[in-house]
Image (cartoon, rainbow, N blue to C red; front, side, top):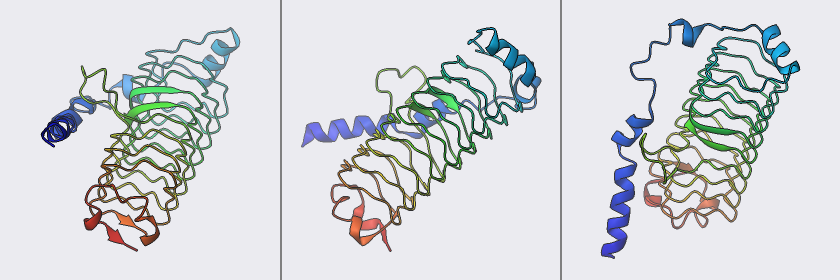
Length: 257
């Protein structure tokens, strides 16, 4: 019991507000400066570069650019700035988006299968119907709109190996994922506070130690999901989900439909 307490206490420390602040790269950044608000390339420039075989756009400022429908599979966009960029219907399978800035970007219907987004800033991103199947996502998607998106087999869990920037994990705080698919997804220790997940499918997903306090799980599916220590304090759940959530934390505080 004592060992379990110590392990739990250690995890709680990692999930503390201080760790969350370490992930928040927005602090002190002037988003009005050209690097975060303008583009150094035109769509034609990007298309020409892709045609010539260029795949490295790391560190580029592509803010506000219309890149919808382009095939950017395998492209390196590490630390690129894509704030308010339009990538609807684009193909980003296997793309590297580590430390990319995608604030309010539009990836509606885009394919990001197997993409890698570590420490990416994707707050208020629009991505209804986007496909993140098999992707590695440890970025901030707070306030994002991702209705019907696919996260099947995706890894959104905390990175317990690299703590130099604090606890890196998927943050979906107040995001809208109604009807989204998280089948076999790894959401261990993810931040799901106030998540709008009505009708979402979490079949066989790993939700252990995730914080879903205040979330809306009305009509959500948890068949075969691992929910030990999932925090559902004040979350909205269905009576039919209680069996699947029997090992969750604060189940007695959850709100029943």
